[in-house]
Structures are given as structure tokens and as C-alpha cells.
Image 1 (tube, rainbow, N blue to C red):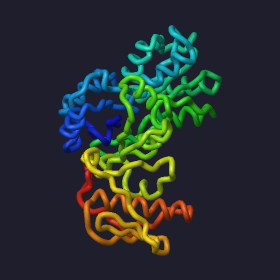
Image 2 (image 1 turned 180 degrees about the vertical axis):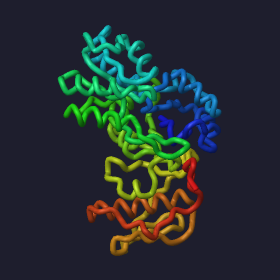
Image 3 (image 1 turned 90 degrees about the vertical axis):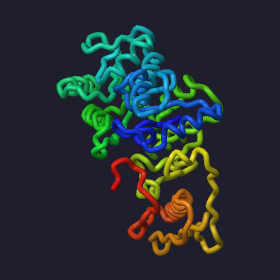
Image 4 (image 1 turned 30 degrees about the vertical axis):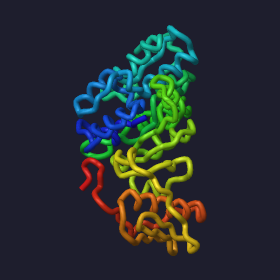
Length: 324
């Protein structure tokens, strides 16, 4: 299960090497799903974008938070229910496909659903906020606070959700990662055994994998970076770490803790001294990340505070698009 933004592409550019690696994966007979919290595009449009960046995909390979939100609403309110829509085309199409009636007039609506939409108007946000405050059930496609763009991180749909819920004093039902509906919808639609979630965000992709108790692979081509990884509590920790998707085809050895409390793997040694992380040695970049993450988590669990990373610089290239 691949997240899209930050894993497969950023903006209109593919992340280097992704298309070939996904083709290699398919050649093994592995099912491939593209899972996105972005509710603005339909699966058809997502598949078209994937094709433009060189990744083979059909609409059936794509599962969106809009589809998960539509299933949540259909199961709660029944076919034919009128749902007030605050979002884009992807969310509207998902509602229709689920047998629901998306409406812009709140008259007769049994719930409201929101998703990212670049043309959402402030007056509509005000109206929805008031209706939610007054008791209209609220389903949010996702709560991502940021979204990666070619010009850096930008505000995500979570900013809108926070605005509505903060004003209304009501927590929404969330369909997207890290909550269960989108993850379960993906497994339901795509099938296969032993799913693996591949993502770039600890607070959505990795936490979402924990929510349905499946393993996860964090790639370092998107949002989450060293500081996030070092401060990750257990529900945010990936099963595997790799700088790129090449990690899908490599062994993932487990770091070893020495009697002196140091962490070793593949020529690297990491230790925390007086709260500061120190790393020495040489080896593969992927093993450096595994050693550092393990040392940081051991310290965090024992002390309750993240390590000081002031002297720490990751080896090798920064694989995030737009990185210096």
C-alpha cells in the first residue's frame, strides 16, 4: 500500500527511481495499491497523474480518503442520504458511487463531509462550521496539517478541519489515515495477504499501519525526517526504514545493543551521552538510519525526552524533492 505525496511523487514530478521499483514489485506477483488522504481527485484522475509520471496504474489500484469517507457515511446513514459537501470533485464522485446524494444546500442533509478542494469558499466554511456547532454530524476525509509541494510544505486539509472543529467544539469522524477506514477500505478493494504500508509520514502512514496492525516501511523522500523519527513514540514507529523504495528489495537487519548500551549495525555505532546523540563508523546509509532510530527510541523510552541531535547529520544525499 503506497502513499502518494512524498512517496511516489511530489507535485508533478516523480521521485527518482519509483516507477521502475514499482514495476519490479509487480513482477513478483505482489498486489499494488496507491493510497491517498487527498480527497480532491477521483481515482481516474489519480491514475492519470501516475501515468504522467511514469507509474503504471488503473483507477482500481487507487483508494482515496474520499471513498473511505463515503463508505463511513453510507454505513451510518444509508443509501440515498443527502450529504452536504465541502470539497472537490473527488469527494463528490465518491459520494455518488456510494449511493449518496451530495448537496450544496443544507436543507434535508443528514451529515456534512469535507475534503481538500482548492476552490472551497470561506462563506461555505462559515456555514458548515455553524451547522456542525448546531449538531449536524461531521465526517472529515483526513486531518493532514501539511501537504508537500514543489515549493515546500503547505497547509493541508487538516487546517480546515481544525478551523471547523475548533469553532464548533466538535470532533469529526475521520476517514483517512491514521484512522482505520481508509486502511480497511484499501485491503477490502485491492485484496492480497500480508499488507505492507509504505509511507513518508509518521503521523498518517505509519500510525495508520499500527491502527490495523500491519507492518510499515518509512521512506525518507517526503515529510518525516530525522527530528520526527527521533521523537517518535511507539505508535509512530515504522517496522522498517529505508532512504528510498529500494528498501523493498533489501534485507532489513536488526541493530544490536551492546553491553555498554551502544547500538551497532553494519559498521555504524550510535550512543547517547548526556542526552546527546553521537554516531561513529561507516557503512550503508540505510543502516545508519536504523542504528540512529533505535538509539533514539531506547533513550526516549527510558528518559521520556528526545535526544539532542545538534551534532548529528545524516550521511549521503537528502532524497526529498527540493532538498538542498
